Amino acid sequence: MTAELQRQARKFHIRVYSAAVAHDHLHFVARIPSRAHYVKFIRALCGLLARKLGAKLWSELPFSRVATWGRDFKQLLDYLAKNREEAAGERPYEPRKDWYKRYREKLG
Image 1 (cartoon, rainbow, N blue to C red):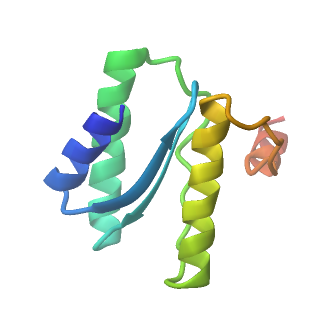
Image 2: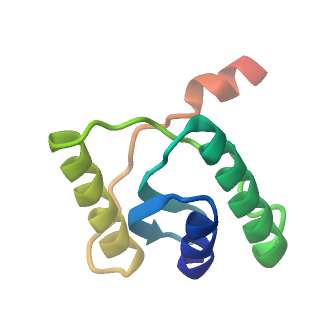
């Protein structure tokens, strides 16, 4: 999965600083030159991974957020390191905030 992430990132001029792969999702920290680049990149990446891994792999839409340089960036890198350790079984899983809760509630 990370090889495909890097390949698509190069294609769309995106720099990936770190990535973490879990059994049902992917985290990455990247520098993206524009919203248009992000849209093309995420469509291409999700489409390719769905074809390779199965269309029903993900139940949610991609979640993204803008981070600032400095402390925020460092916290994201630490978060991805924690995710990699959890995925490898080196640390117990700690439940996170459900970012999609409000979205699911709206759908009923």
